Image (cartoon, rainbow, N blue to C red):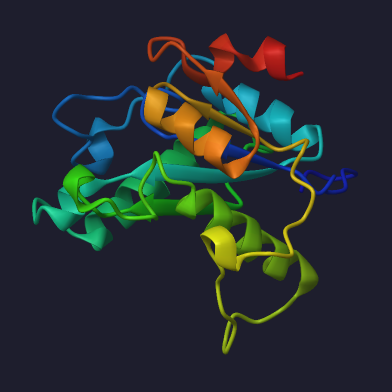
Length: 190
């Protein structure tokens, strides 16, 4: 968390393409294709200074389709984090999760299902408690009975699947214009 800021227990779940960076119908295939949307880093910094953790949740079916590897995605995300921090030193991603599955697979981990949001909450909670993940079980859907209060958490996305995932998880969703991204809805959030 930024210096002098305590975690308020809530999470800002952010889609990636069209929210933080410029998206492409042909995917973001390499780190050199990452272009930040205007003011997205400043908006992430603002959210973190408000006491939120930031969890990026992104569908990345090119992995499942064999177009590129998880290592390639890790390099893209490393570049994205560097660019965001260059603009605002508080704009740190606490966690980045991706779903490698194709839409037709119906995977719980792929938006519009809430699996990444459920996993993100549990991983961030365990990290904040200093709990190791070894031997821990992740719970999803109806199996996850003892859920924390997420009434102050939210999701920002540029597509309907993001809003459906937010609704299924039980949090507020903010639909942004992919040309404006997060900065286009930040005033609604704060």
